[in-house]
Image (cartoon, rainbow, N blue to C red; front, side, top):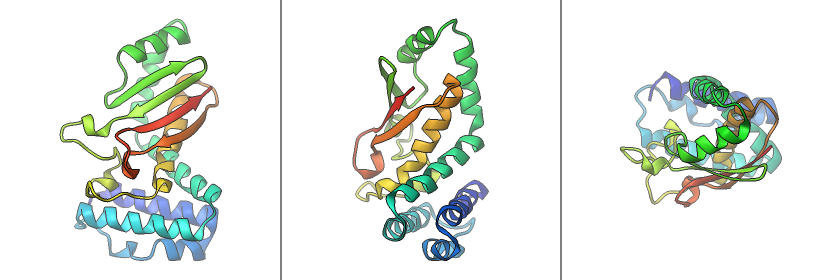
Length: 194
């Protein structure tokens, strides 16, 4: 595990404390102090799976979503190059419909886009990569195929998707997580309304 993964775990703990308090953070982050640069991907994935189980038991759903979406917005900041490239691509088109037509023809690698009116369906297909992945998140690299994780984990991606499309469209969006590869679906599926 590298510095980036340790930073993601640290940021998760900070967001737990921000939305649920120090005592809840201590319970949810139990065992994270044993993770370091030498931790194996499976050890990290199973720790996160257990942390999500603790989060589900200790924190109401709305706050869990807030915690994980804040993590996703942080991930968007770390991966701002992806968002900047998408904004640059958007600027090349005179109108939004022209941009969407181009995106529908040639979406971002590992994604598919569907559009109906002011609604998008953005699908992530991490298994299309070489080598195939279950999730774009490096913390899930070691999660075996026969293991699922709470959908709570994927609210992080919802936060990333919100930041991505708000940046590209330069307006607020509402995003709903519909399906996740980490909970058994073949693709991650997000509804994006603007």
